[in-house]
Structure formats: C-alpha cells, structure tokens
Length: 310
Length: 310
Image: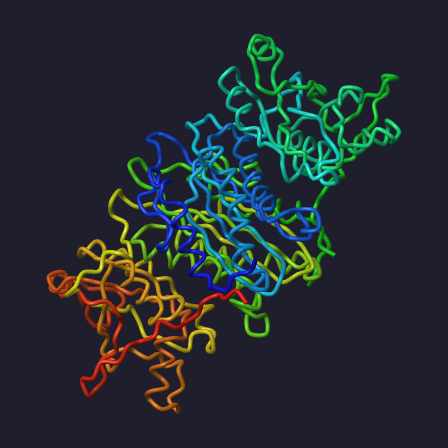
C-alpha cells in the first residue's frame, strides 16, 4: 500500500520508533546531527558501505525488508572483521518517489530488525527522494579497545588461513540478503586468541585474500581440496567449476582469518559458535597459489567483483 | 581526461593522499573499517547527508570539485549547528562508470580542499560505480563536550532570534556550492554565551524556523523588515517577492539562533567574525508569524524544500 506523505512524516515515524534506544545518545534523531556517548577509553570504529539497486540487489528477487537488512548486515560484517562491537547506525536513504512511504517503512523495518538483534541503536540519518533507483548508504559506529582492532595487514609467513564458512553461490541463491554477520564468532576469536589478520570476504576469496596478502607483504598457498564450497553452488556442476564459484563469486561475508600455529593450538580447546575451516598457509614469497591434488601449484588470479570505470 | 582504471586504483590513490592525516586514526583507509581515537571525555557528533545529482546539484552549473565541496560543506554546517568541532569525514561515492576515474579524482579534490581548510581528516568510505547519476553520501564525525551540544529544541519564549547572514537565491546563484560553513561563528558563539537553540537553514527560513519552534514547543514573530535578503535575489523584483525568496528558497546554510535577552547583552562586547542579524522573537503561543510594517501579524506557512513521495 502506498500512503501519500512527505519526508517529514517518515522522519517523524522513524524517531518515534527509535525512542527506546536513547541510552547511547545524548541527542538523537531530529536534530542537525546526533550526539553519541563513547565508552571511556574505547576507540570508535567506523564502517560505511553504500548499496545500490541494480548492483547489490534487485527487487525481482528481494523484498524491501531484506534490502534494508543487507545494507546494515554488510556493515556489521565489516565491524566484525575488525574484532569490534557495533553500537549505532546512521542511514542515508535515497528513495524512489513513486514507491511511496510504505515502501520506505519496509526498508526501515528490515534494518531495524537486524539492529535490534545485535543491540545496535538507530541513531540518525538522511532521507531523500528522487525518480531513480534505491540507494542505501549505511554508516555503522562501533567500539574497540586501543590497539585491539584486527587489521588485514598482519598476516605472517607460517600463519594458518581459515574461513568461517563455505563459499560461493551467495548472489544466485539470495544468501547475500540473509547471511548472519560473524559478530559473535569474531568476539569469541579475539577473546580466545591473538588474531594476526582478519577481513570479511565480500568480493570473493581470491580477490580478498590477495588484498590481505598484499597488505601484509606476504603470499599464500591454498589447498584446493580444503576450500569449502557452499551447497548453494549447484552439485550438478563439475568440481572444478564449483571451486571457481567458491573462489570468485563474492558476497559471502564470511571471515578470512590468519592465525599463528601457536594460536591455533590455543584455540583448539575453545568452543566457537561457528567452526573454522582451514584453507591454507601464509608464505613469505608473494603471490596467491592454489595447490591441487597433484601437489602442483597454480597461480590464483585475483579476479572477483570490482567496480570498473569504462 | 578520462583514464581507464578500477575502483581499487582510485582507493589506492585516495589512501596515498590521506597518508598525513593519520594522527587521529589508529586504522585508516584500506581496511574493513576505520579506527578513530576520541578525545577523552568528549562525545561524538555524527552528521550524515546524502546529495544526489539532479536534486542537490547539476553538472550544467557545477564542477565536480564544487559538488564534492558541497557534499562536505553541508555536513560541516550541521556540525557547526550543534556547536561541535569536526574531526573526520567518511565518503560514500556512487559514480557513473562513463565519467571515468579523473572525474572521481576531481570530486575528491573538492572534498579534500575543504577538509584541509577545516583540518578534517578523510578517514574512509566506499566507492561504487554504476550507470546512474552521481550520489555522494558523506558522514562527518565531530566532537563536543558532554551536555554542550546546541540542540534545536531549547528556544524559550522571550528569546531573540538571529540569523548569521542574508537569505535567498542560493540555488539560483550557485552560492549553495561555495558557502562557508559557519564553524568559526558557532565556536565563537558557544564560547561567548549560552545559546538556547541553534540549527542551520537548509530548507528555507520559514520551514526550518517552524521545525525549531515545534521542537521547542513555542512560536515566534519575525519582523518582515528585519529578514536580511541576499544580494543574490534580484533587486529588480518587488520587495514582497524578494522577501519570499529569503523565507523559502533554502540552501542558505546560515545559522538560526535563539538567545535570551541576557545572553544577547553578554554577547554585545564579543567580536564575532560574522555579525548576527536579529530577525524576531520567540513566543509562548505556537505558530510562526510575520509582522509587517503595518504591525499586522501574518501566519507564515512552513513551505520550503521537502522531499515528497508521489
């Protein structure tokens, strides 16, 4: 149902919904800017991801609620990858006028449900309308203790590489709309051991692993038989083709983690809510290689999802 | 000139530009999220505004640099209106593929020049491409002492209302691209006296003043002869029409300020870098009225720029 109404009405509605989240906020929705308390001694972590209709979702295969959910989830995944705790979210919406206010509320409901699940406060934002496609720009603020954020540049030669779940087929199956950001796992991991490097896999394992290795000044050998392939990748495909999906599809939002052997042993006794899957090892020599059954090494091209200028 | 290149190349380029701003950042551009130090005891202020090509700017009348500048300036204006100090900026860009990387650099250069002017650190963001119009989503983080942020809901009956400059004609003249956010003035004001309420005028004096009064549970009488009309509003128009532009055009980004008589006296000796212009007085009775030369009161309709759903 489409209700008539302006931006003001929607903003009023949002701020009524948010009335109970104001413990964190000195000034909440409805002023020029929000004012947020920070836990003493903590640093602020800021994730910002913009999602666009046609690039990151299509309404042929997604509800407005799931699109809102995803816009927050990808940012929570970034916060998880830093080993941080999410606190608040700021939402920039660019809505098609023709879709009406009820559509906007459904997008907001999807954001709100996930925010509630992870106790994240909806603290502010900006709502605009136009005749174009939906754009959602989400900024999440989190907190982390000084020098405790897990960066992607700390992988060391000899480190074991893990992923937090099976990869591939996320966009095709719709999993990219419903995935659970690995916040709990990341918290468990950083409590249980020292993580050398961590990042989330958004553009495909091959491309994102290359980014971690480049930042760390290292290389890696992945064992092709150890790469977990998601059941969303059709079993009717040849194995080699299924592996390609796992390596390059992207939108997995699993964590890629580098741990020293010592820390792996330390971790053995911990009960993680998500089992880690060992996929390979960091090397001093640069380059990302895939070790096949025969033992042969094959250079893994870092192709994956990258926005291109024409 | 359009250079071929991907998003990665642009992100690499941005992070090289930002190499000197890392005093504030524990983790800067290039990781899943940024990690930012917060001054002990301060609260974090968060402003988020999304600008869209066709709604907030057109490339027939704006350069990429000016568009980038505006995207940051409107957020700095919000930070100023809170009486806060800006610290860092996070930029979400949605760029047309066909415009190429050089265009992206020019937008970024406009943001960077203004950021440097106000010592704001470019701390992170997200760059995407598509075939649609330019969208820039900017989040600015600032700092303010606890209970020191100036809200819009504190105007008291008897308060004097001021604006920080002449109004009207901003969009038509291009002033909306080049205005100076009133950061200095806001700092001087909050140091010199107690400000009851403050906000920036983005959607027109009539609409924004109505917002302040509604939030404060008050009304106001503005003197029509005291409303400063910008020289950008054509002098060839009848006075009444010029006044309408000042009241409703919007995009002025001047501050609207409510001060008690006592504080006005206190302020008299201060040297402000921008003179304040007295425009009226807050009343206990609700409603925004315009007092004309004859002394007659006319209800001022809060029309102005508002995004509408069809």
